[in-house]
Structures are given as C-alpha cells and as structure tokens.
Image (cartoon, one colour):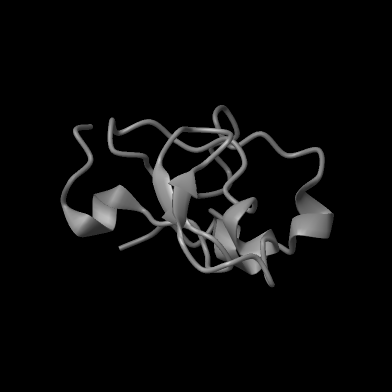
Length: 82
C-alpha cells in the first residue's frame, strides 16, 4: 500500500516535472531500474511519442525502457535488486 501523502510520478505531467529530481525527492514515487535505483527523471520515455517503438536505455537511470510509454518499474516486475 502506498502512503497517501506521497504523490505518484505518473500523475505529474512532464512539463510540470522540469525541476524535479526523484533520486532524492521522497515525496514523489519513482520507478526503480534493474539495479534497484530510483530513476531521477522517469518522464523521458513517454515523451518519445512518434519515435519508432522499441527499447532503449533511459538517459537518466540506464534502465531498459520502451519509447512512447511510461517508464518501466522493475520493482513491479520483481527484477530490481533493491
């Protein structure tokens, strides 16, 4: 269960997150990469709308993600080594 005082990163538009760094801001959730590290700016992949659909490494945390869709949270896949 999530803390109701913590905002979900998915509820924040990329334009509203410009000065946000989720690596240290614990008032907002953040997806984890394969190494269990918080992604400091997970809005990058979803902004690649119109790019060829495919996997690439997130420029902020190095996670393998998919262009045009929200950042994958490896915690939910059970593959983050936190």
